[in-house]
Image (tube, rainbow, N blue to C red; front, top):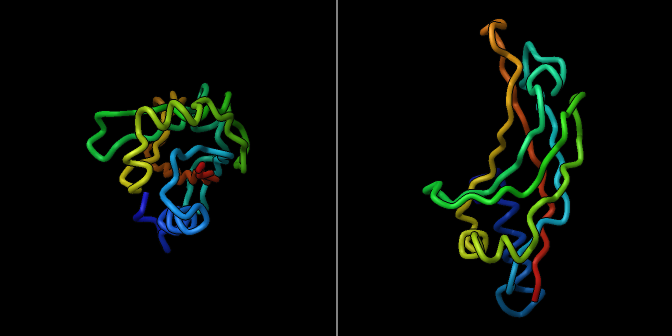
Length: 136
């Protein structure tokens, strides 16, 4: 997570520590959106890419721990699409808190595509925007 340009997640953690006067006791997800990026080609909207629901997840770097954090039911258009939050703050704390505190986690998405047998000249760029919250 800390490899994003400008490291906004690192800034979030540093600001949380500054504001709270200590490290947060837990970190949650307040809001998420999904958007089809500008680099997408050959795909008009999410309905061309996914034939069913899309799931957003966090995992540790080794991918041995995974927590699904949000779902979009049969997305369409190019977004932004609001992602329904499915993981509680407590679930994130129990599974990935140390990774979230250090920023050593990945954000991913899974869904079933409807692209079987279609042109191989397709490229989808998806962007997930996440608003985190830190708790004392």
